[in-house]
Image: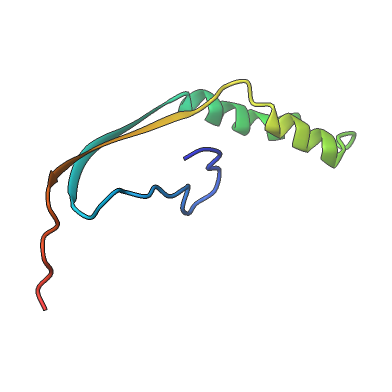
Length: 81
């Protein structure tokens, strides 16, 4: 899940088989990245070209890192008809 700056699906992950899983998720660098993207539009003035805006937007000095750690807890539970 990277470069997720809008609502919606950030990415997909194929799991090896159906089942019930438990896990944790965490991330690093999220606040610093958010701060950069919040401050960048405040710098833009009439002299900025679309290319400069795109270049500045893509040069965030901080990387976000997302980790999703899952463990199988038991086989899939059959659904009732």
